[in-house]
Amino acid sequence: MVILPTAGVDCRALFAYAILQVYGILGIGFILDILMPRTGYVVYVDEAGDDGLNRPLRSEDPNGVSEWLVMSAVVVRESNAQLVHAWMKDLISKFDQHQMTHIHFRKLRHDKKILTCTYLSDLPIRIFSVLSHKKNMKNYVNVRARESQKNKTAWFYCWMSRLLLERVSVFCGSRTLHDYGEPRSMRVEFSDRGGVNLQSITEYFQYLSDQSRLNMLFIKDYDLDWMVFDKENVFQHPNQERPGLQLADVVASAFFQAIERTSQGIVRPDYAKLLEPRVARHPKHKRMYGFGVKVMPTWIPSRLPCDQREILSFYDK
Image (cartoon, rainbow, N blue to C red; front, side, top):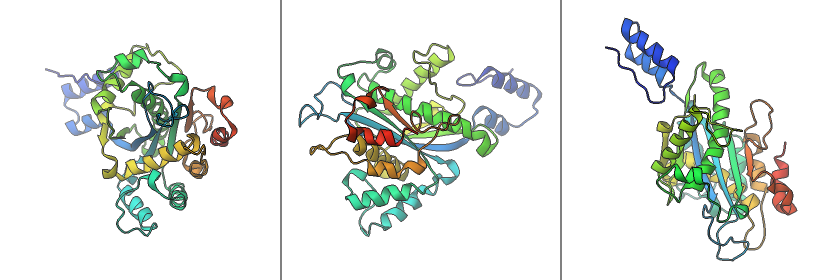
């Protein structure tokens, strides 16, 4: 009797699996390698700003929430993932603060922020950031995203993660045959945060997978590369326990500070500009804007004041 695995496996793989079982040509280990691609990339995801949409914004009320939400990813080849801890340890050693055990970018002094972003700009990583201007979304609800989850408060976070991981998966999908000679999957690690649990995230991506398979995606401009993305390879960890998530915190916070005004009305684009050598370009048209750096809504940059528009103009290439 032939037993076929079904979840997440395409028809060609099922057929190959059946033939191999019937004839006993190859061992089970090789078969599993075909059906379950090994990890080729580790993707660390963190965010800066608030994901609340129904409270006053800080630009309208000093006690309000942030005007922007930034979600960023740092992509590391699996072979380099074991080096991330050493990178962070080396970076912290340059601060001459022996009691520091992990980095929280927002709390660093200006000179240490410059040092940190300069350090990241020389690492073998790729960077992605999605910047969402929330003012146009106040009281808006994405019904499809919300109804795909049990946790109704997490839809905005999940929607942002979709925009981000669409681009990350396209990048990894375009690289995997070159890097490994075969499809390799992404291991995605989200920073743990209140109000959004791992189940909410995986349920949302299962919903997207079903919609993609049936060609029923509402937004068809982008889709995840399902060859490299698997919702079973998604995890959530406390930021301070994962050096890779601290790298993602640096990127998200740097772009957040480049676009979100402080209480004194200041933006600081210099940190995010330093990361430019590591920001991903689209595999085909080689542009960073819209891919390594994505702004939502797409029309908002033209309506921003010059200081907030500076970082977007810098990456519009």
